[in-house]
Image (cartoon, rainbow, N blue to C red; front, top):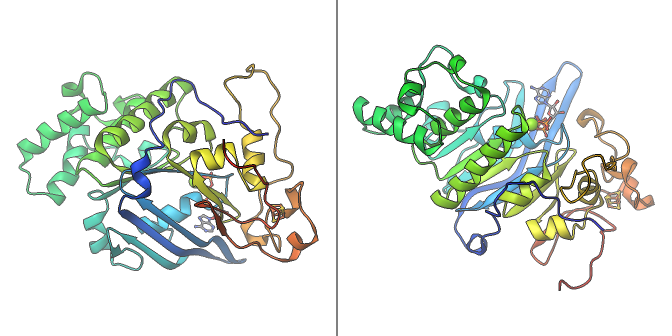
Length: 346
Ligand SMILES: Nc1ncnc2c1ncn2[C@@H]1O[C@H](COP(=O)(O)OP(=O)(O)OP(=O)(O)O)[C@@H](O)[C@H]1O
Ligand code: SF4
Ligand SMILES: [Mg+2]
């Protein structure tokens, strides 16, 4: 039976009851992303639907290539030029897909922000930290340069950058990796976004700094009531911060539910396999992990039927030919012909 993984030092910030009734902030419907390549089309994201409500944090998990990043890059209008996107993504009621760059720029970096694994890809190397934080304020609001600098200083303090006054005039290369990640968060927060998309924000950092940045994100979510999408490989991080979890496999959403539903009582065999492959803090550090057999699918050659069938211990004949639809049960969703059954919750 799978157990909830846990990451030390993470506050139980998620699981807020208000989120089930709060207004939708981002409504993604039937999103598909296809990449044109010389060897044919790659279906990277297929029929992906997800609603994120005010103040809630959704953890998005799945192995490499599952389509996590491309789903949210599509929402932000930041896909590579060989991408074709279809579907809908309404942010605060406004459709984002297919909007011209000028219109998207009014939303991006102000109401809706995104942070990435590597701060150096989003920070400008030759611009001082203070200017980078002020930039979006000056672009999106009627703030004066002096006010913007004061706000940049307050934001650096807010994200716990030490010696903030001095940092304002430094360049990104003068800062440590963890410090740069905090600066990137400060840039993302400058205009008080209602939603932050964080794509593997801590993967490139060492373990201690990872925990500090996650603490900061949990704190921001709790105190600012910001909706958050947290893309991560780490289910322990999800357990600590998220309210709900979306599990992706082969470019599709295969399970969605509250942290308790998905991490304690997963219906999808892939989710269960992911949970079993997670290190747990209540086990010795050298305890062997159960790796998921086989490799994640190549989106160019997705297996027919259920894409997980070549790796699934429960696979039956039907799984090889018929793709399981996403079905709803007790507010949770999963796509499996032979889901794991659990008794009534205690
Ligand atoms: N410009 C592109 N052209 C062709 N294929 C692409 C392009 N960008 C992404 N892909 C493919 O889209 C698929 C989904 O990629 P995505 O970046 O969403 O994965 P991911 O779930 O974020 O994985 P990871 O955990 O490694 O970040 C991958 O197979 C990737 O190779
Ligand atoms: S549909 Fe079949 S192959 Fe796919 S996860 Fe369920 S049991 Fe496994
Ligand atoms: Mg990614």
